[in-house]
Every structure is written in structure tokens, then in C-alpha cells.
Image (cartoon, rainbow over all chains, first blue to last red; front, side, top):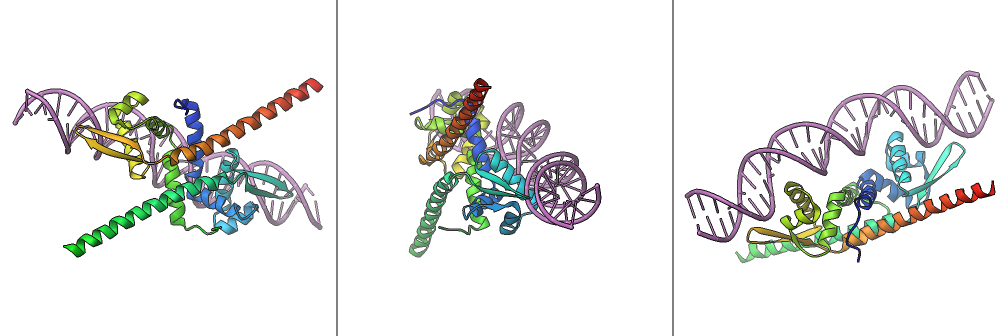
Length: 116
Length: 116
DNA sequence: ATGGTATACTGCTGTATAGGAATATAGCAA
DNA sequence: TTGCTATATTCCTATACAGCAGTATACCAT
């Protein structure tokens, strides 16, 4: 397939991963999977302070991970796509593989202990 | 599906994304897609200094993105799985969608200009 | 042993950014 | 207008980390 990727594209890709590289933002995205919420809702569902919620939402919005609509005083945020969860699923599968491998090592060690 | 994700798991997921959130590491991974390489090879193919290559490889190795084997003086690094490219493909698809959307907006603006 | 090469590590500096507190803006009500 | 609420932004501090230079370690050759 493609071999050479320009530095600009690498930076764009890295930028997207950087947004996902924060537990608070992942938590917000996870909550939004249950449906759209206002900033105040998110303060309640996540326990974060208002400034924190708002700032993370700006980032997520600017990079296209969430959409929003204004209704009176409130701003409703929602997931822009389910891609985030595709990404997380892949990562989680990896975590599972790692955990399994550690488990195997532990069992192997236990086996050696019994033999010795 | 699952709704509640523990802070620990969120941190683990974020940690994985953080490793991918760096253009230098993405470039190294991209090069490794062409086959295993030593640190010295990578210095040549990426243009990075030795310390830089080595440090990024440590990070990638510690989080399971690459494997390595030692042969004499050399250490050969290779991709641990193709998952990285699954992840990048999803991100790239998103970038394409964003680009298309910007393009549409531009064309719409051009159209308005012609009408006016 | 000595010397040379490949890789890893340490200490440092600058930069980016997360989070808190405070302030600013936007929209609604009276 | 004034006051109130929801959201955004600004300023600040602390932390994390990328990259550099230098040094240390590991391995091979002689």
C-alpha cells in the first residue's frame, strides 16, 4: 500500500490521537454514547467542573469528534460518529491480549514453582 | 453495550493513544510496516538521531506496539501487530471526511459568489 | 586485555497542556 | 435596564515529555 506519508499528514493523525489520549475526554465521549447532553448534564455525569468540561468539549468539537446544537441557554453536545468506539475497541482488544499474556506468564511461573 | 468504564481502564486506553500521538513514532511505525529494521536502519530511513530513535522504540516496545530481537550488536525491531494501521486507517478516513466537508463549503461559497 | 560499533540511558531545557480560579459572554426573565 | 443561569475564555501553576548532548553498556574483533 502507501509507504510514504508526509510530515503534515503524520501531524494531523497524531493530533487526532492526542485528543483521545486523555482519560477525561474518553470519559466524556463514553458518556455521550448514551445520548446528547448539555455541559451541565456532563458536569453531573462526569463529576468534572464546568471549565474542565467546557474546555475538553471545545477540543473534541474542534477536531470533529463531537457536534453541538444550541437551544436557548443550553448547548447540547453529541458524538459526531461512532469511530471513537471503533478505535477504543481495537485498543481494548490489545489490552485484553496483554492481560492474557501476563496471565500466561504468571501461570508459567506458578508451574515452575510447583516443579521446583 | 458497556456503559461504565473504570478510571483505570480509561487511563490504560489513553496511555495507548498517547503513544500514537506523536508524528515521530507514527513515522517509525510506518517505516516498520515495510519490514523489521535495526536502530541504525531507522536512523537512516527516518533521519532521526540515535537517542531519539531508541527512546521512541522503548516507548513503543513497552506498550506492546513493536517487538524486537537481538542479533549480535544489532537489535531488530518489527511491528507487533497491524492494529496500528487499523487505527490509522480509521483516523485517515475521518481526515478525508473533514477534507471533503471543507471542500463542499468552499464550493458552496463559490456558488454564492456566482449568484450574487 | 584494547578498540570500535550498536544501542540504551541520564541529565538538561524548552514547550505543551491539564486543571483550578476567576472573569467574560450569551441568552432569558422581570 | 437589572439580575440570573449556562457556557466560554483567560490567567496561572504544575506536570509531562520531546529532543539534544553526553555518557554508559553490550557485543564483537583483534
